[in-house]
Image 1 (cartoon, one colour):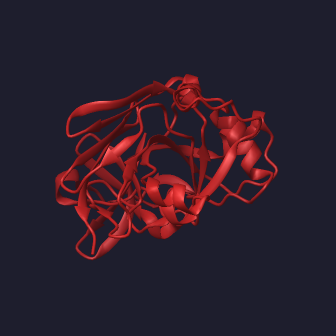
Image 2 (image 1 turned 30 degrees about the vertical axis):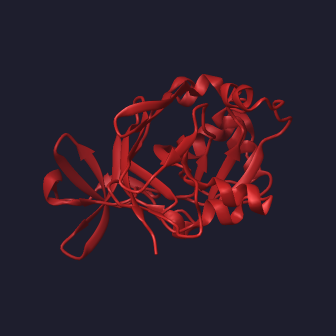
Length: 253
């Protein structure tokens, strides 16, 4: 099932996508039952980010191939950082290249969308707390990350968290191909089978630190091949069985 978030004539709502038809639902985190008597044609709707997280919990250095690329030892525990909700944008929205940075990088990722309040979750129970999965781009001002010695400023600019296009339910996260295309050329390609800490373990680990709320997202890490973008570039994150997320880079002021 594909769940989207849409805008139509001043109204914002969630809906189930079936082919070119969208069936509105009141709240996908409560019920996936369509609202009786309502449906829309997909082309008449504006597609938004598929959820509004209170926080995005991100995992650094979680692909074996990326650790090898950087010449770094595998972490013993997940390395976590946060991105603010104000960084979220949807498919087709521009990523703004901030004037204070001189190197902005793409990072293609599989994102986990939490479906219900999660606290102290056991790994074997984690799947029951997940609504579905979507594509994410963990955009990063790499020069500021190196300059600051920590990641908050570099990861937190407005527009630095594209999500979408849809939340996809009922898929196994264990072997999803994750790719990034820069102006049509593939720059990143790997599989979630390369994750050092797989999805269900991440949900359990994070829930023992902080409460995860419906709509929160977990970014599971990026594979090898991270690199820079420039204004005018188009970046596309593709996750097999999940979708394709495209955004254009524009200059900031």
